[in-house]
Image (cartoon, helix red, strand yellow):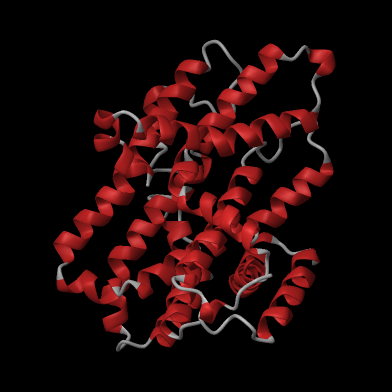
Length: 337
């Protein structure tokens, strides 16, 4: 039986980790096969589209919640250079490193195997990390760059809007409808800021501690299920489904059995590792599957199972390997935490 959130020590952090865990599992599930792949069943295309309407808004919401909960909107201005340096080390360093490794790996592998989104040349691939990013082979890690931008600009914007999160939220809502080019992920910076600020507002008003036992959570869960089934286009669907999921998914996770919440919390605690590496492991699993399983026995369901398990657990096993080697843990391990 679920224990009320208010009665649990550190329950707020535990719930955040569990929500992140569910979010990162959905990230892996949506990365298994890219849109437009020939022969993909309609059910997976629909599943992938629906997941994309809320899973990244949800993770951005949780990042905003943690940002405000840790008072980074104040600390960021008090020591901006130090704060920016720590955020760059935490977010930009792994973003650039994984981006370069992915581009290099896809470019080399394409000489021998069929690789999704392989760059035409090494130079064009590396350029695509920052320019024409919607067609970049490393678009899947855009969240790190965009989150870095939010961490830097939010303290200043908070002051600009007279320390009113609501006003900043209205600004972010207007920004959502402004279409920018995909240079330095500007289009995604504009579109996802509303979810980050929504997380800040929720933390400022202590949404999670008041969640347990609230009648709002039943309405949020039911409403989310209904709106998710509607035939949305991406722009309005992302906004509506994304914002409602920020209420509904924490509410849903809060009523799950404790053992299941703890399992989701485990994946949530490893979300950075899984996010950085899942696509690489999925790609390796695809190549291995096509080489090992004879063509007549190849099955889409089996491919999904192999790639999902590899994409979820491969990064975790790599992190454990890195942690077991002191030299690697000291240099690389901190970026996988």
